[in-house]
Length: 244
Image (cartoon, rainbow, N blue to C red):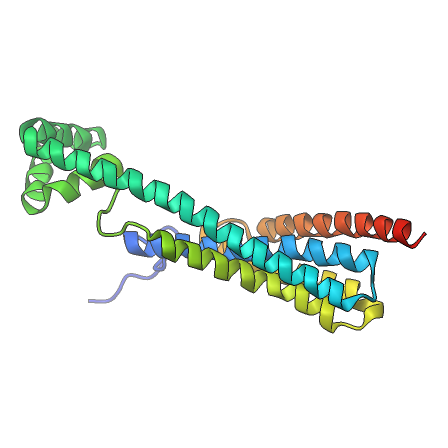
């Protein structure tokens, strides 16, 4: 039998499996974390460079401090957020398990009603609920009622580490650009490196999310350039006042 040709309506790469979708969400979060690192750190080092273009130690110190504080902040925020989500999911799992133990018939009727609400005929909904409940009633109820997979709960520590690493990788780029470039052109070089890096993150996030690539790239570049422009102007004004 020949394989069916791919079509626009049924692309072969569409992620139907839940684990594939979860992986794409993690990759998208990593890309966005790197984007945050690029924009926030670029604004910081450009501002310091505008205030004191020849003071490489000060620029490097500010950039390093920005990387460390940003990575820690991202990691802590992600850990707290995922821990809260995980605790909530565990509580819901325990509640669903107790309901199945105490009133399995009512829970079964509820499951049948949910399948009917999805568009299945009553007889079909009853058959599907019966077959899936015979295999793993708790997993079935969690998936249909709550959209939870008890075997795929996100680890807060893994999320925190991934967030910190992604931010750091993005933040290192503008710091290296501004420190390694000659003093006379370090700010233009940094602007150029940041624009290229933002274009790559915009492209990656659009591809992973299935969004418009050109729009995503334009959006992140405009945001990053505005951020750097503001800090450059402020840094220049502060530097002029201090020099005066």
